[in-house]
Length: 267
Image (cartoon, rainbow, N blue to C red):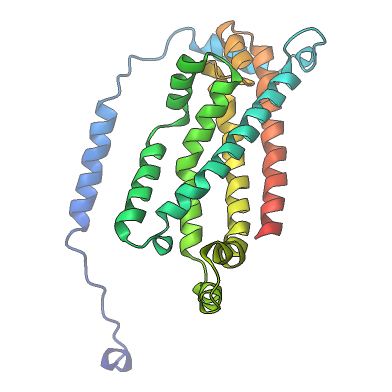
């Protein structure tokens, strides 16, 4: 207060560990760049780059629909179906895991801690790794993509659902408990109405992510639009690559808009 009256503003204290943090970051960046092998740009890089952009800017519109074979529309619909089924499976299966991991739904922290640990373990494996495993197990089909997205999403959605359960208002639960309501009645009338909007919002958000992931899983044989995209890239059929990328952009943009609108109305 005396400093303010005298017109003197105290200088902020310098953090003695600031330079140590800067030095640590510099060492990390140097180590990361040193581990990257760079042998220069190939002589054909410019020619291939021009061919890629020429094909992408002049897409193969005839591939949009083919009466007697795989086309863009079928690939996009397959990708959309994989995303829907994968999201639905994870949204249903992760609910008991979410209640298991929620601290306020367990008698001891050991129980909720084991649930959180299991969800963290599931999240450890990326969709691409799970897709490779399921492709080896069930074959290179769309079913492998559904299983990969479904299992991987359980970990993330289970965590988000558990956080939503932990933030519920205890008032309705205590009111029903005082009237002698059963645990099932408390769950149905006091817990579910509070967490349902959040569950639906997180499910829609995860669906947006799964649509993007489903386009990649086809590159390793897990179905969807990624499979013809992989073939087009291998054959250097850049005009087909262009129409496929354009279709993916349009589909994801539409889904993001619709999902965002629905999430705003739900929340």
